[in-house]
Image 1: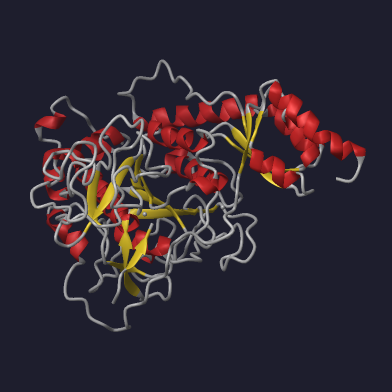
Image 2: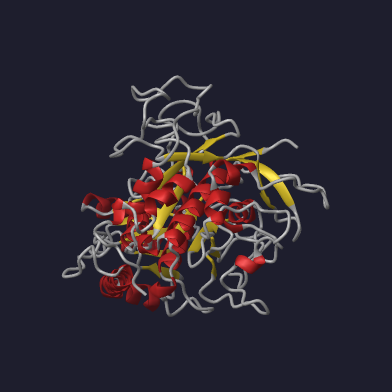
Length: 511
């Protein structure tokens, strides 16, 4: 079987005067994306992100960093929601009065709206709007291909190579399988009824499913995707998300042990329709992961947030994620809320400085490159350095070539895919094993990151496609090709156990 490579949206005088009004408003300091102006000038209503000036993270004093992470998360979510409700009040009232379709967000202080050219002109003059950015839908699919299914009934001889390569089975033998840990997957959706996934879904109690607080669909107005819009139950219209969730937790109780943390539970949010995302979709899924909502997308509850977020997606420039810091703000707030945010490095290698797209360019994300079964860096795996980053990227690497996992084509369907998209859930699953071994790590993403970096294996890791980046070769540790090395979750767990010196100061689980 050939593995698939994954890469880890004027006819009246009044109308003639509008461009002049927009130009005057921008001269006074308002900023409007030129692509929006061009699209609106054709008489279309356009999708816009109305970004408010106040984007700084709320100060949570007198809460200390050592406070219970759930208390800090509740305080953070409450502060973010309060700020949005206060700062957006006038703007929302203006939108309501004009019957404009809109959706507010609090994880980053902005509002999605569908507006006309005249409304753009008015928005550009408002003191409570800093920028009006585009929310483009790519006219073509992202370069993501589908995988061929493994023939039904074909026996699997062993635990999948990637799971074994990072020493997950040895951790299972110690009694740590990810139990008590929740991983969120933001992707193309999930086939939740798959035999290797169903029993690991937080919404399944063994006899019935509850999708509230466990699933969210951020696709509301896409034409032609197979799942439809605002789906109340998990659905995957592309297959990518089903494959990544399989590597997180997949285990059918028989011969298909494809997941790193089969004792963990998964929840999911669809942020791409048929492979295409937008800034608003990415932000909406991050907001939901930090505080999941009920079936009516109301009553957000930070106590039901995930411990880990696995992100095998990248927002390319054409999708608009480079025009502002809204995506970065959302990622930063997730991590501030104690969620370990794992992100694919991207598939633009093997050249240096090829980690290009959000969220892999952000310091708050834990970035993953891809290796093969021999610990060689994959040719496609993006390499650093990342401009403006405060540390070497990627952080670590993990198996991402010819990874066998669950497919969307049937409830017992499996197949192989390749990409940093496949490496990322290996690392997210490893983080779940760490947290099950030492629950005090929950809510402390910096500690989880430090453990995975410090115990990663560099001996034997090679790069046949690149001799070095940023003045570092593959022999250096860390380097911009493999990061600190290919992860070894057994070594990380051994270091993380509460009796070890790293926890001598007494980090304890807070029930």
